[in-house]
Length: 131
Image 1: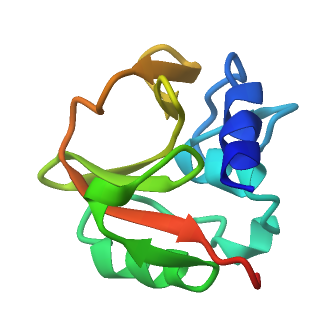
Image 2: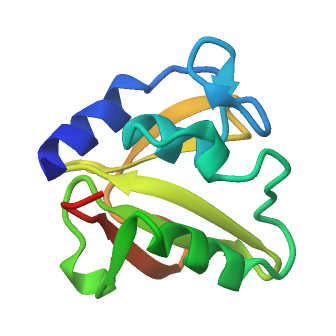
Image 3: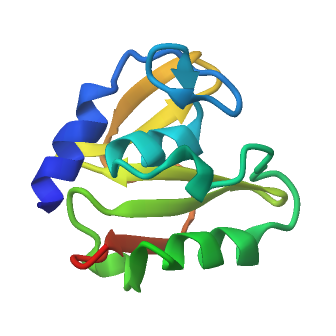
């Protein structure tokens, strides 16, 4: 199942970046990427959700509903990474064999970056089998 999730994330490569985007037809942000990859309902993540600011606890609580936290060192393809891109901003990505997929605001599309993320990984999550 984990490799299936990595493949779903990779299938979104090239999708337009759109803030608050939850649909590949119109664009996705990093939360939308996770929603689409794991076939979550858009309502499972608030529409006005923002990763800027001090939202770490909110991110962790939201992910914990459908995912279980794992040790970062044990992350494998198909897991969700929570990244700290700056002091006040978190970002989500999905691990792959080659690296990780994320919605890149600078490139304005979903991309796969090879190797480890350039930002600190502060948490990793694996989809629960029962959810």
